[in-house]
Length: 490
Image 1: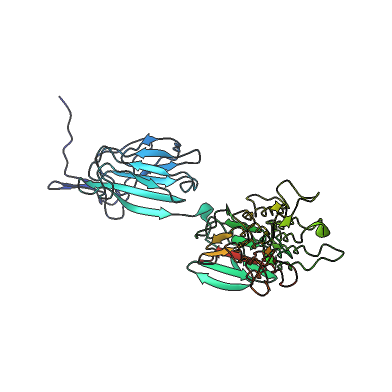
Image 2: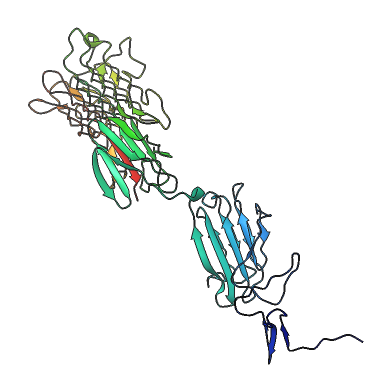
């Protein structure tokens, strides 16, 4: 026979206070203020949960797994994305998950419901993706209508850092949402009072454009655009140019010097020296922990025939100057005529510019023929070679520049200058186009006088237009450069 002890109340010996009390169907353990503890190694059932989980600190998850009711998991996605499968939903079931070491932003964790169950009342069977750094979520199963409901959601930055943002002065400052934009149209200093951190911002986006080359004199090539370099930081948000790199750059506390290159002068009538060449533009520089230098654009080639030998080739630079247009091949010319200057000189990656166009070379056959200079190279396009010389026509167009919204709206920079045209026998021509981004147009002979090549736009880094025939008209000068720095400040 099984032994039984039947009591309604159990009291302490010391003060006769109640320890266990049965009243009707309710059994009360302990008095108010008392705590009830299980012996070491003991387990409990039937008491239910109180909105908490048991964190599985001894089992960090690194691959797909199935969660259990009442447990919390630290998930390490450093090795790649994986999945947490929720258990079958029972009212009151609870599961928690936490980013183990701030890697969910690089490799997300997918939370998948059991079968056709829902998460937060969404589409039956659809999973959710946790892709925010440091995120943690607790899910409680309610019912078939809502399914698993996220009742706690947090997002902590790396290593408990309080977010800090870059703070700086210098140049002309504009605000675009959460971003500051510093524009330098001349030399200056980007002076940093706070370098920020990963929780806020610690890198800047930049665009550095050098001065454009000047156009050549007489039947000449257009000036090459100044080198164009751009990089977008991870915390910035704008439409960058197609030749931008990713990553941005860090900045040093204190002074980060800025140099804005001047545009090159247009060529002049040749004397004992090859002055028909356009002059190269000057470099632009963003100084700091990593110095970013864009090279000045190459000057356009100029001059014709034997008397001007050696000055018809376009000069190398950020983008190369265009070659001049001439009659008859000369010893220093290539098989296709005076060559354009080489772009991306010195070389960087991504390339900072393109080669200038080659000027055509044809033997003189009749009057009313034309010598047409080629266009200078632009940031995204080579300078255009001139079409076949005709009575009426234009020099080669300048290569197109690059468009970016780093300043808050889309603007093109670093277009090549257009080549000039010289006709014989009374023919007239038309102005060639400068490359998109501010390139100067090429000169041409008008009805009564030679029209000059036009100057490139200031602070565009574009090349100047070449002149047409001698005896009037000037070569266009290159546009000055520009430096723009953008960063998240709040």
